[in-house]
Every structure is written in structure tokens, then in C-alpha cells.
Length: 290
Image 1 (cartoon, rainbow, N blue to C red):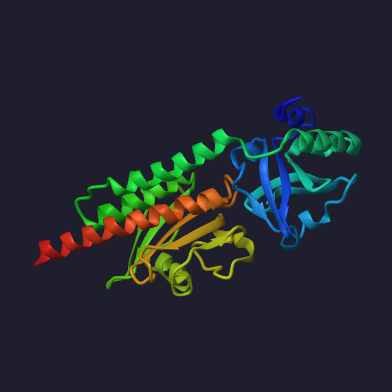
Image 2 (cartoon, rainbow, N blue to C red):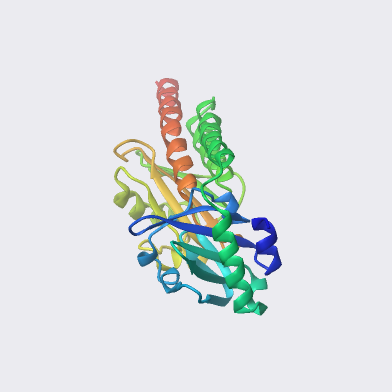
């Protein structure tokens, strides 16, 4: 039986087969729904995941809530079930699980774990292509101005990562923020958006910051907070030392999810390409002014 048939048979929208690859690390090898889309790109430490750590052999560990909540890593759902099968943990997600018998879920978990041995080769190749295409979409930009460059980078980054919000913060001087043309917009002035982003910029340095659940963010500032309608956020510097500014993308509550390792790779690759485009645009702006 296929993984799709196994998942659909118990009303699951998503299925993940998380295999232990070394001490303290589980990798999603394959699955159904987001489990298939995130094959090879979901790595978690079970001890760092409060809900997932409750999975046991032969026992269905359930989660149910009236609203989507983070289950593990970047995965959000209103209902989920986890069953340990040998060195693997099978996670099922979706509202349809609530009426399913524990025995049926255990059978599905065992069959799913037995059916998966490695990440499909075609999926690995598709992931590499996605990273290359995202970089190319930025590297080939020929903007007429710095503003055009920043807005286009924010827009294409949000599109590449299926995010509802994207923005480029340039530290200048002057400090400016440029938001994506489409998608979720904060109900606030640009100065307020800048004020919310600056604490992240100060903490960013030379690495990306990924917040899979903004309800427990270290930067809970209006108008870009969980209470404002965002659920997850990823931020990356636009220069090696972070002094030029940063690129930020976020998922909204309308489609709650976080950022897989592939998402993070795409974002870092885009930022590297964007640094070159923005530097060129800045030089053009300076030349025009002089």
C-alpha cells in the first residue's frame, strides 16, 4: 500500500516518517502531504520537541486543539498523532484523525515505517533545482533604482518560500524598509515596522535567525508579532557582517507553517545573490546623485 493510501485511509492530511540517523537527530525520509514535500528537509531533536518526546512504541500519542499549533519543527496542525516504530517515529496530521481508533493508527505507522528506506533521489534533485532557481531569480534582476531592487527582492523571496510577508531592511543611513508588493501587510506605518525589525538586526550578526513559533519569540514587537497575525519568521543578513541590512520573510496565520532546512537554504542563497544586486543598485544611486 502506498504512503498516500495509508494516510488517506485514516483521514490524515500529512504523514511523516522520521528516522533516527544518529543520537538526538530524526530526519523525515518521506511521507504524504507535507511529509512528502519535506522529505529530507525536516530534521528535529526529539528531546528539544516537547510534544514529539511523548512518542512511545505501540502507543498513540495525540494532540488536538481548536486552532493550528506547532507540532514539531516547522509543522503546524490542529490534530496530530505520533507512534514510535523501532528507530522511527511516524507522525500523522489532520483533523480527520480525531475519530480514528488507536489500533488503526498503529497499523498505518508500522506499514509506513516499513515502506520507507531513504529520501527519494528525485526529491533530492528537485530540492537542488529549487535552490538554484531561487538564486537565479535574484541574480538576474536589473533594477532601475535601489527601491526597485529591495522591493523586488522582498517580493521574490516571499514567493520562493510561499510566505505571506517579505521585507528588506537597509541600515543605510538612512534606515529604510521595503516590503513585498503583495501578501500580508502590517497595519502600521513604516517607522513602526522598522522599530520592530531593528532588535532582530542587532542580534542577527552573520547568521540567520529562524523562529518556528512567534508565540514564544524573543522579538515579540508590534506590528510583526504573533498577535498581529504572523506565526513564523526567518531573517538573514544581506552582507557577510550584517551591516548592510537584512531580509525577512514570514508565514501568516492564514497558512501556518514554519521553515524547513530547504527553506533556510533557499533564503541564505537568495540573500547572497541579493547582496550583489543591492550593492550594484546602491552604486548606481550614488553615481546618479553625484
